Length: 198
Image (tube, rainbow, N blue to C red; front, top):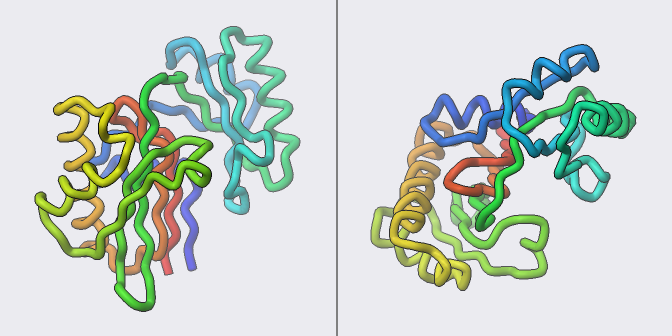
């Protein structure tokens, strides 16, 4: 089994034509100032490590960072988390949060999920599922099945449809994908992702 960290998963998905939010990965404090200068304010900083799965539960996501001193404190705090290997910095975006996922099941093979994303995903349970492979019509039905889609404009729905179909193609190319989580995708960009290969 091979687990890709957020950084590795983001790089992989970017190469496969997905729109991933701009990010900088650092491991040392002296890389911080240079990293911040590459991104717009405010920043979000996240802990990164092979063994770290639920960053939010560990206090591994720090938002609304607007100056270097605060960023420095955030870096120190994140690197103290067990199994921390580095820190990912992104410009903090605002907008509707959606999730995409792939799970390889013994009964159906690869199943694609789409729905409401963010930290309240588990409470909302606003998600639809389809067994791969499928086409545009099923992707559109998937989007309409989730309540959050009532807030989507036509352009946003089109972006969601494209991403769902890209995931379908991805499992065809990489049948060893066991799990893939994109949560959230915001403003059409992937903010956080994780991939497990069998």
